[in-house]
Image 1 (spheres, helix red, strand yellow):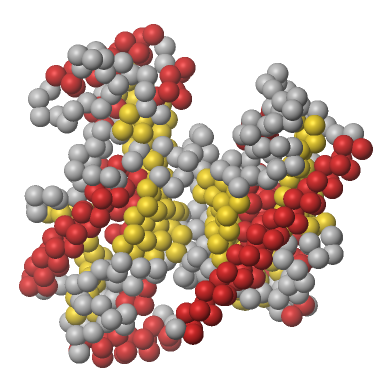
Image 2 (cartoon, chains in turn orange, cyan; image 1 turned 90 degrees about the vertical axis):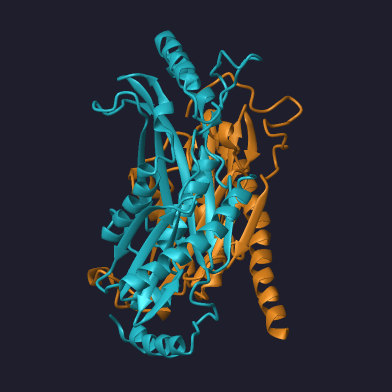
Length: 245
Length: 299
């Protein structure tokens, strides 16, 4: 990570965008936004705009990827060419392949894959507008889209990052904080059991700082989890209201 | 073709004989069109279009680069479409397939051939530096008629695009800046061109190019698509209609009511009479869509 003399957090604990150290950016989640997908979710998290769609369970192709005992979860994380400052060439690069892999693995743990041998559950995550923390936003949206698709799961996976800026441990890094901060720790958990599904860290943290950042990120996950549940309930409540009409 | 479309074909043609469509529309009627602009902050311009359940997002990015050797004084535009697997169970990831390339090329032609973007106003230093315009189209939800949705998304996004001068100013040396200033003055002197939308001083004589300014555009043509199933000509086909269609015809018309582009697709044929019908429908629908487009960009 780049070092800089930029003051990311004031002595009173105020961050560049006016947040306190333990505040999340603004989050908006909407479930069931696409017509063709089996399940979908649109999520805004600060300046991030992410769309997730789930297809399946359906036959896994190519066939050599099939597992005779359980389903596989194939997540695909993709950034739109216009989602970043300098146009990104369309198609997968090394970064998005890695993110796709860790998200696939995180989701596979939570799905009752043994119910669908030889099947594939395809999770497509499109980043339409990016501003730090897209993998957390993507995984969180994927969790809601999977519920919307009716995939049997042990829990709704949720992600959130914590990090360190200007020597302080803070929640949910913003753009400058991610670029010029000291450390970034995105995690995904199963909020019911607290199991960790995804964990990455880059930067420099002491063991004590890591523990504090981790606890803070878990706290963030629980807050985001409430937004997820609200989005799902809202979808079914409005569907129920339509039926009653 | 799988069995489902064959069964549906039967249903759709029977309804057609009674003058009806599966979603209750008239033959000439479009689904509800929604245009939302400035939806992506990182893009120079963007728009999300919904035609019924079909959803398309278009983002414009700009950069500075070299012009083509044969057109040293014009900007460069390029169009790409991504059929992301999010949009349909049949779309796969990977490099763009035939259909994505056809769509990108049809949209590109619509913008390029009618000179909607005034590329000649996007030259900085002739032969060295010009503005590049990247049109990237993302299909988000595929329920038919991608041609119209994608072209409309591209137009709405372009019409809201701001040339990011402030971001690139540090890349321009003294020579580039003075050369650009000259180009702008030259263009400004040509009568008939739209007002040059640059940050001017009070006398409007000395364009100072430090502010972002709207992409120079002319009034664009609007394309409308119809398909033929048996003897019926249906405008704005939904997915179920589109996959069983025999032939497809896209007609782009401008604000004067002239035809600016046409493209026929699929293996069926049209009679001359049917083509007249499509042109008439394209003119009527095109006018309505133009109103919506102008409204969405605050005109």
